[in-house]
Length: 262
Ligand code: G3P
Ligand code: CA
Image 1 (cartoon, rainbow, N blue to C red):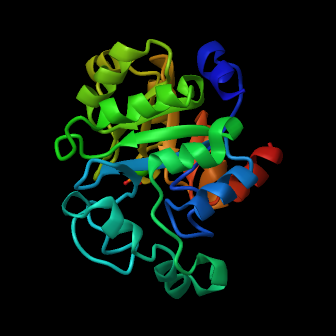
Image 2 (cartoon, rainbow, N blue to C red):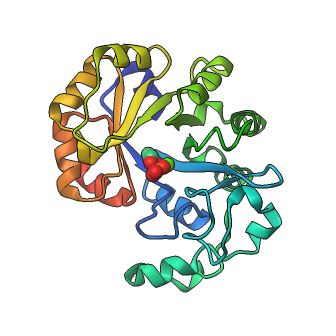
């Protein structure tokens, strides 16, 4: 069980389906999340944004331009407007080997719809995106988590320490992950690690900039290490040899294969 792992530090390697099984299906849609669950991912990862009328939806970008047939900022569009968009056809055009007729006219899901669809069948790695753009997003997210009684099926990640601190105030047990992104070889000071250990359970960091000693440093600080977004088995294998606790991947089945060969 993932949370047993988090709390007891048992050796369980965690698979996070990044935006669902987004290598195989249009990211952040029910189709992508369903596939992630079918591939036995431990978590489905969900980037949250708020619409003009204050609904929480799953979408990575701040505009709908890349992942739908529409255009405009999420914040400037109502849920009705966003629901009228096709969030699947772009995938079929871009990834023809995985294109499927059923992805045409796939809709952008709300967080409520995702919880309704999957309930306690999975765990959810919720990402508070751009909190400065979406004030109050954390409160709305947590209200839904409570309404669906899912507090023990949730982890929260964010680049924003303030967002994570809010969640920690409301729940002392929910696993929290501080996200970091490096444009150069990753370095983290002992002071920063200590600070993060004070409120979070782990770190998510871009895989391409880390190395074995970075992983060891984070682990020695008592933090879990889930690099993102690891899509090739060569890198998955490398990450495991360095001692990571899990990875974010668009291809959960590939990571499962690598774990099984351990
Ligand atoms: O899952 C970690 C990762 O999601 C952070 O980056 O840009 O894919 O949200 P991004
Ligand atoms: Ca994300």
